[in-house]
Length: 428
Ligand SMILES: [Zn+2]
Image (cartoon, rainbow, N blue to C red; front, side, top):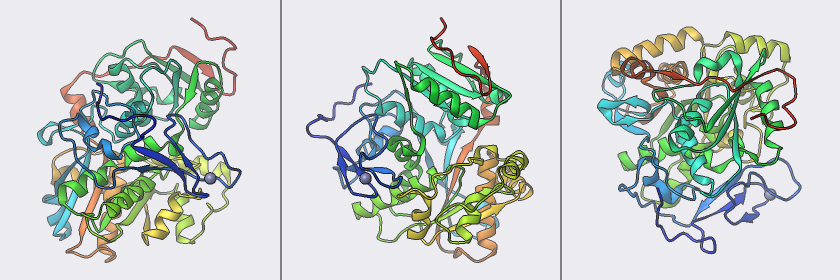
C-alpha cells in the first residue's frame, strides 16, 4: 500500500545518527553501522517530526509512521493495544496498571496474526526495504521472529530465506497456508548459533541481504511501539515499564521511544523506569547489571548451554545480547535507573496462570516472566501502589488462535547438517 506522505530522498523524514561519534547519515534502507573506526555503536533514527501526529487512517502500526524509519506502508493490520487491567491490578493492589497486549485477542481488537510482538519489528523491517529491491532477505531465528517474518512475507508475497534449527520447526506456523516465496532452511543437529553461521554465509552471496537484528533501526523502532501506543492512549509516559528480555533489543527500544516522547513534550517530562527480566538459570544481563558491569561477566560456555536448556522461556536465551554496545541496554538501564529481575520457571508459570485467570487470555512463557517480575517488584516495594505501570505482554492469545483457526506448518526446502557449508550455487 503506497503512503503518499510527500517523502523524498532529498527531504527525508529521518536521518540516522551514530550514538558514539554523532555522525549523520541520510536515509539508507540497509545501513546498520557507522563508517568511522570506533567501538561498536548503534545507529539511531532521528525523525524530522518532533511532535507525533497519529495517522489513524493508516493500517496497524503505520498510524505512528512519523516515528518509523520506513519507505512505505504495508497492508498489515496488527498493532499493540493498551488497556487498563482490572483483575491483575486488583490482585496486586495497584491503582494504575496498564497492559500492552501484543498478540491475538479479537475481543480487544488485538490482531497480531502470529501472536507475538516480533510481528511489529517484522512489519517495520519489511517496510524499510524499498519496493523495487530485487535481492532476497535472509533471517535467522530460533522461533518467534522467524514465524513473524515467514507469515508476513507470505501474506505480502515478499521473498524470504529463513534459517532455523531443525528442532524448532514446529515454531513456524501460520493460520494461512504459506506462499512459495518463503523458503525454509533447517539446520540439522544445530542450535540458533549454527543457524546464524549458515544464514550469514547465505547472505554474503549475490542477490541476498541480511536484516541486522538489534542494529537495524526499523527493528528497534517497531519494538518501541508498545510504549508509543501506551503514551498516546494514556496521554502520558508511564512511570514504570516491565518486559522480559533476551537480546535486550526490546528494552533499548522502549528507552528510545521514551526519549522521543520526552522530545515531543506533551507526554510529561520524567524518564520511564525500565524493569527488565530474564528466566533463571540463564540470566547474563541480570548478573552484569547487578554487578553494575558494562560488560557481560565471564562465563563457562558449556554451563551456559546447559542453562539455556533449563529455561521455559526459550525466546529469552540470546548469548550475545545488545548489552555493552554504545547506545545499548547498559546505557538504557543507567539512564532510567533501571532494575533487572531473575525469574524462575516456577514463578513464571504461576504468573502466567494468574494472568490467564485474572485477565482472561493465555500468554506465552516470556510474558509470564515479565508478569512475575512485576509481582517481585510489588512485593519488594520497588513500585508505588499509585504509580502508573505498563506491563508489556510480548506474546499472547496463541492458544486461543490455534483453537479458532487451522495451523499450517512451513516445511523445509532444504535440511543442512550443522557446520556444513551452503551450496556454492543455489539449487532450483
Ligand atoms: Zn560513529
